[in-house]
Each structure stands twice: as structure tokens, then as C-alpha cells.
Image 1 (cartoon, helix red, strand yellow):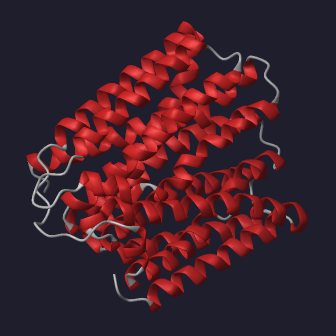
Image 2: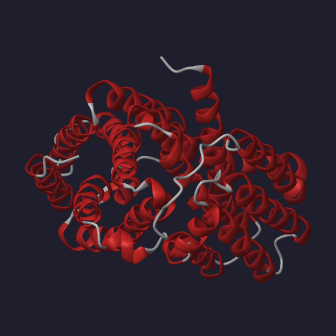
Length: 396
């Protein structure tokens, strides 16, 4: 049973992760659709991918953030960092709404500033979570992280479009800016009571992180799990389109999966981690993912009803993904050193993000040249490899 104080801490984490994902959903989910509706060419819309850079590279400045956040013998400056970066992010969103969509480059400049601010804030939020949550609470903390990401993405990528239609670009973005300000403000309030750091701590650094065998081993295990869970995910949409499903239906299916099944998967993952442990949860995710990919591999060769294949994609790409990554991120917390939690956790996150970018390209090439059946079969084999590595490495 979670106590009132723990619920307050978790509510702050939910608020922070939802706020960050609202911005991500706006940038990579809602904005491309709005720009296309305005008639902008796809090559210019593709420039939005540049805004991923701060999230992929934030490990470079994570040590500096943690050195300033963590003070020996004193309370961390997490709230101060969140208020400062939050003001920059909200200010950038206000400017984005005021500028309009044409010309696009000033909007991209504002959103790059917002991305830098939120990526920096994420370092502090993750470091705070590592430092304040006990091992027994890691599952619930990561349910907030993963579930908050799904909720925020649905708001930024879905609600934004409704607001744009109702009140225009400026009013829609300013409404989301107000929501982000309220959510980050609540996190800042809940993070003020974090316990003081130890009187003597080592200076946070990437070198110190990479020198720890547990971190190096954790990165290897994390890489195998990410490959297994995400290798085929980006091809689910094209697979359903090739099955003859209309684009509108695939979009509605994806939205339902992200908001409803993704959130439920994260909450269930937190519950299973709390009751049965991280490794068991990861192995369950890999086993069910293996079965789902097996169904898709068979279905890609014909013989299975389209509703079965669509439902399998929905479960695999939303509920199961959030279920497994809630456990994986809980493991990230366990591997991270409380004295530099933001550095260690960020390192794992950037590994996840970097692999995800590469996986999409490789999966697309494999599906184009060898077909969906081969793609899903390879992804299923990766589940076996990841599961074996989890069993062989018995140390949490």
C-alpha cells in the first residue's frame, strides 16, 4: 500500500513525465499533421526530426546538470532546475504559438530551445526519481514514466489537433503551454522535500558511470531487450495498410492503443514489478512478445484473419511495449547510482533512443527486401536471445 507521502511523490513524477511528453507529442505527433494540412511539403516537415537531437545527446551535459543539482550534505536543487527549464520551455511554446507556422525555421528554432530545456529537465527528474524512490517503489515510478509518456503524447499529438480546429494554432499551443506550466509547477512543489545527499560523494561523470561493470553489463542487456521489443514495431502500421485496412482505421487503432492500452500496460507493469520482480516481468514481456511475433510471421504468409493480426499488432505495439519498458526502466533505476542518478539513467535512455533510431531503418530495409514474414521471424529470434541473456545474467 502506498502512503500519502509516496502518492505525492508519484503524482509529481506523473506530472513531470506527462508535461515532457505533451511537448514531444506536439512536436512529433501533432505538428506534422498540422503542417501538412497547411500544405507544407514533406521535405520541410521532415526537418522536425532534427528536434530529436537534444534527447539523443543529453548524456553529454547530464554530468554538469547532476553536479549542480546534487550538493553534498544538502537537499538537491531539483525544483530550481525544473522551474528554470520549465520557464524556458513554456516561453518557447508561447513564442511558437505567437509566431505561427510560416515561415517554419523560426518555429523550429523555438522548438529546438524547448527540446533543449525539456531534455535537461528530464535529467533532473530522472535523477530525482532514482534518489527518492526505494527499490520497492521502482515499478510504480516507472509506471509514471512510461504511462505519463503515453498520456502526454496523446495530449500533444491528439488533443492539439482538436484544439487547432477549435481555436487556431496560437490558442491551441498557448493552452498546452499553460498545461505544461501547471504540471511542471506541481512537480517542483513535490520535489522540494527530497532528502539531503550524503556528506561526501564522488563527482558525477560519464567516466565514473562507464567504469562500473554493472553499468556496462546493464547497457548490453538493455540493448538486447530494446532490439527484441522494438525491432518490428515501426512496421506494424505499414503491415496493416498492406493488409488492406484504411489509413483512418489504422490511425484510430494506433491512437486507442497509445492512450488506453499503453497506459494500462504501464500500470500493469508497475503492479507485476512490485509483486514478482523486474526479471520476471521482463521475461513475461519477452515470452508474450515472442508469441505475438510468431502469430504475425504466420499471418504475413496468409491464413489468419485480418482482425486477429490487427489485434496482435495492437497488443504488441502498445500494451506489451509499455508493460515491458516499465520493468526495463525500473531496472535502469536499480542499476543507477543515487550519487549520479541523472547521469546513469540518462546514459541508458540515450542508448534506448539511439538504438530505436537505427532499428527503424534496418527493419524497413529488411521488410522491403525480405518481406514482413522474415522481419517478424527475426524479431521473434531476438526475443529468444534477449530472454537467454536475462536468464544467464542472474544479477539484478
